[in-house]
Image (tube, rainbow, N blue to C red):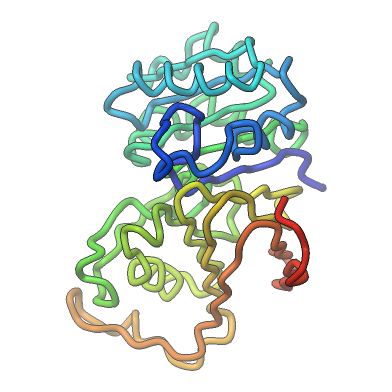
Amino acid sequence: MSIKGTLIPIGGNEDKGIETHEAYHLEFIEASILSRVVRESGGRDATIVIIPTASRIPVEVGENYTEAFGKLGCRNVHVLDIRKREESEKKEHIDLVKKADCIMFSGGNQALIIEKIGQTTIHEILLERYKKDAIVIAGTSAGAMCMTTEMITGGSSKESFFKGAVGLKKGMDFIPELIIDSHFIRRGRFGRLAEAVAAFPKLLGIGLAEDTGLVIKKGSTFEVIGSGMVLLFDPSKLKHNNQKILAVGEPMSLSNLKTHVLSNGDRFNIKKRKLKVLPLDAPLV
């Protein structure tokens, strides 16, 4: 059965049209990642539900996203701040998720999303709707990382390429073929994503830079959006991988780890593992 929903994982710090300093305001909000989220969700009349469960400052996060979507003309924006697991079973919360055109998970701690929402009625509804409805499930930082079956929970960038640099647990299971890391360039997370794909060599590793994301259609193809880069690790042709035999803290070695550096407009077929890049003279979209 073909998947009808769309996933939009974002690497963090997406332009919300709020910061005015040029170092933060990378694009006008009308041309931003959030604008693409609105278009994919059906436009300004879409019902957008912000879930700041991962955040330690949910009120501020909810207000920021409400303001950002408001700048894009959206008025049907709701904040669903689930702090306790039993809140994922409340009828009014379930009804809101059932009618949403877009669910937007905020950044923070992805483990909190799993703890408060994973394997609840809301999670089951999202899994079902993602398969059968044209719903958009977007997420930034932690909200992006939780989308996969095998989820990165954390780990030290300082210990990159040493076994144990990455923590892993089960995620929300929207897309089993990928494992996603965020803030990838700025926080130097190459090593922990490399260890993740070494531990799960059938998966593709996706490293999202800030203000950069993917639009994943039908669970099979994605397009890069935003102002930064995406690093893709394809371990399917690994010739050497010593991850399983190492003790924690020992240096890893991998050979023939295929790597792509992608940017705005580049496309990738997840099922076929085939890349389509924009021509050098093509305009950015």
